[in-house]
Image 1 (cartoon, rainbow, N blue to C red):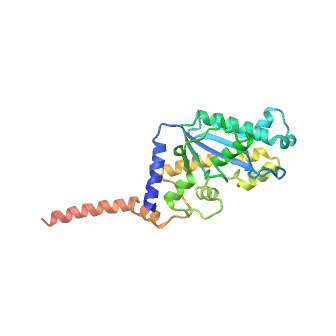
Image 2: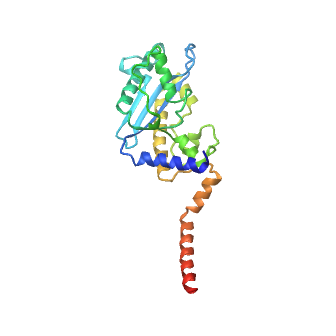
Image 3: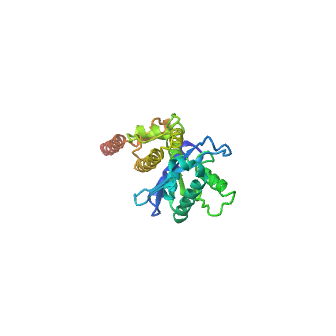
Length: 258
């Protein structure tokens, strides 16, 4: 698909979400590599945050939240991480079941390494391959902002390893609670659970912030391709003014030639 068609598709996707009467949710999560869980080939999911674009919904799920509910201390949690993770994912699935027809905005949650597929894999593992109770969010209900930005501005709109952090800084978003995924994993292993939760909440707020910027065409990106620059030039108000003057001048010259 060419750049023009990709950009056109992205704008259509954004418009369909904005103009829809359907609920718009933002989701993000965190994971951790646990050194002593040698039988796990994939990191455990530690924290999930979901909020609605209109702020009417704000749900936080976490292993430490589950532990607190049953009176388990931080030092005791390691022995039952799997039980806590399953309990957390079951509650998240209950939420998804109630909001399956919503739009789900996310950042790069697209594969088994990180994304909805990774959540499904963990749920499957924790239930012994029994996916009863797992709810798949339809693909047409998901909107990945990283993909949308790539379609609008090209794959190289950011060349930094952490593209989300890069574009947030470019748009002057407060990132003081923001941590990379690796930093979140380290913080979790150090039992600093609230720091991880704050980081995930920040990313959810960031996705909401960026979507509104994209929808209003006020987003700033670190790097723009030639096509994007061309479109911005020809659609700039000054160019519209020049076009208007040229039209008026053409009409005057036409009248003088009569």
